[in-house]
Image 1 (cartoon, helix red, strand yellow):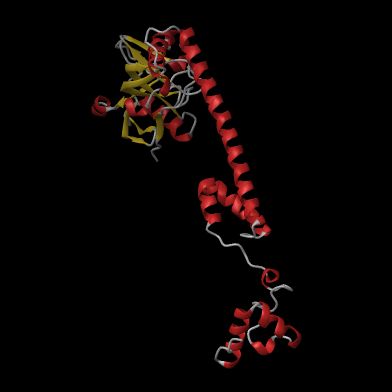
Image 2 (spheres, one colour):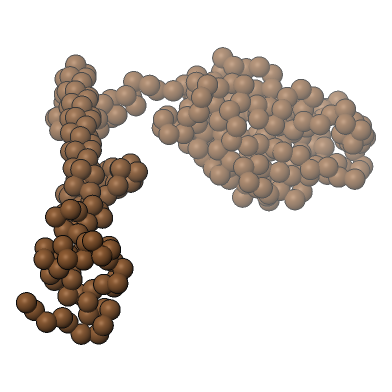
Amino acid sequence: MAKEVVISNSRLNSYGFRVLTEGIDTTQYARNPILLWMHNRPFRGTTDEVLPLGKMENLRIDGDNLIGTPVFDEKDEFAQKIKAKWESGILKMVSAGLQVIEQSDDPSLLVQGQRRATVTKCKLLEVSIVDIGSNDDALALYHGDKVIKLDAGSDQELDFLKLNKQSKQKPQMKEIALKLGLPESATEAEIVAAIVALQNKADEAVKLQKESEKLSNQAIEAAVDEAVKLRKITADKKEHFVSLGKQVGIATLTTTLASMQTATRPSDVISPENPGAGEYKKLSEVPTDKLEQLRKENFDQYVKLYKAEYGFEPAKD
């Protein structure tokens, strides 16, 4: 049964660079999907040369992976030997032969540990079965007229992929300078000084904000304490109104508390100087020894209770 294999993906390889899967052009390869052995092509015309093993079918991109299925030439003896080892799992790696078209030092494309430029555009020229390698670093880069077989460990031949840190640093510094309100010709020291000044302003703003919050919280506490003192709210509701004040602000809290009525206690209504007021519903409920006192000292309440008892007001003295 034919087995699919990952040909390439965008992961960081052991040589410190990445090949973006989205930038691999497979148009030309689809017309001639050749499958080689170890990136070798027959040039000498002798009988001991290894001819192409077959072709890749079902070539496609699945997520970040370039995938395909090796199909071996049934009439080629060497190809059948490789096929047997492939199907038994002895050989299970492939390597993409890529021609680099564009590369980038863009920091947004770099990942942790990357030390070479990102290959953003390339052309898939061939796919090879290899004996040692893995899908993320067993590559062959076609650079100019030279083939760099990375599965052979040709790390020193990748100078053309070196990150140009200096060339990228200058445009970034210019951009930073302009964002700081400095001329693009500003020196690194001037840029650093401007950044430090901004940091100091930010620290001062945080400090002022904390002080403002502290004063606001103190004002809220004082307003709620005053409301408790005036019996507009009970002490057990203090934390609720403090929390409310922190949400809506001291101005709204003050307005809310000002609109609340002071609670009336029975002792404010019923006292030796104001007997029976609000305590009784009918005149017959007033004790006899307090009836005359109520009539003399709180005649309006006496009239109210009298009317509640008999249905009409008593005659005035």
